[in-house]
Image (tube, rainbow, N blue to C red; front, side, top):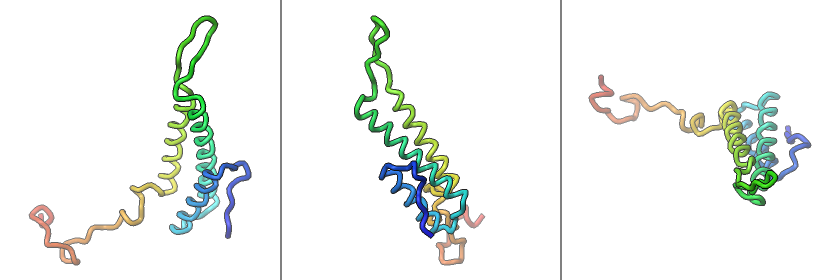
Length: 126
């Protein structure tokens, strides 16, 4: 079955992220309504992140702020928003088990002694 992102997801980068997540979830046989909803949320976050990055590119990381006769530089609020979005995406990836720590290739068990592994050292024999 072909899964499509929500219609609100219009940026190509966000749609591409949605497709990647769906493919990975299909590989792990972990595709359900709940995981599709989380994939949509990650794609929406990616779209917001791209919009904030575009704002940072156009206005810079700091902006000139004028308050009456006072002039000062302040941090562009998009910088903090991008950092918060990245953290939210990381949490969703962990929930979907798509982080490197939850990678199915890494989570294999080390061969115990006598099953094709080396004989080990004194610590493994203990």
